[in-house]
Length: 255
Ligand SMILES: *[C@@H]1O[C@H](CO)[C@@H](O)[C@H](O)[C@H]1NC(C)=O
Ligand SMILES: *[C@@H]1O[C@H](CO)[C@@H](O)[C@H](O)[C@H]1NC(C)=O
Ligand SMILES: CC(=O)N[C@H]1CO[C@H](CO)[C@@H](O)[C@@H]1O
Image (cartoon, rainbow, N blue to C red):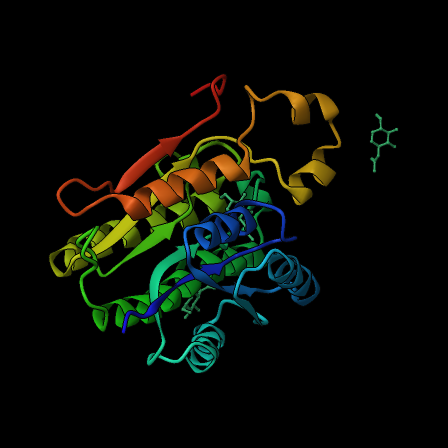
């Protein structure tokens, strides 16, 4: 009997950005979905939306990306989707904590939050995902046991005047993804780090900018659906030729 594949995504914000678009895109490919996020109401709304379009989905709200909270989300995922019927085959760590400030204005709380979402949370998430992947059989089409994707950033390879805390977190995320890719490639586990260079249009960035010209100009911002299509592409790559790092930017981004 073949097991139903599950896509687990952590980091959904207000429910209309990269995480949500990825949940939809993987659901279209036949995955059931597990949503992990901190905003309980928005998570529930997204869960209801997906259900209404016929997706098998469950949401798991957590108070933080501390190790214990992430562990409890995975315990609930395993009981909602028992291993007799389901297997986690794709996972996306999209949680982030953006800080754009001059260095002397960065507070200990900023450092703590950047640490928790980018380091503690990503390590905990990866731990549970890799453990689940190790129990999977090798997929006949792709030759892999599973794919773990991290939403990276141009700030993960380059510091700027006002991104010390954000860049430190994103550098860490990239380092983790590279280490995992090297350790677990041998076990046919695919780890990928798509690096996003530019601003994504989503409910939070829309509200923050309040700029219809920016919203309408496809040349200067990224669509979450387009990012999600690249994530699905990564998931479909086979083991003879797969990508660790992708670099996604809008056409007119200055880099
Ligand atoms: C960063 O995270 C680690 C692991 O959770 C924790 O022990 C440490 O205190 C954190 N450091 C800061 C500055 O928040
Ligand atoms: C958004 O911009 C419009 C036009 O510039 C302005 O009238 C409106 O008050 C702004 N809304 C917010 C929430 O800032
Ligand atoms: C909830 C959350 O942190 N979402 C993030 C997903 O990744 C994109 C790209 O880094 C961010 O813009 C979102 O904030």
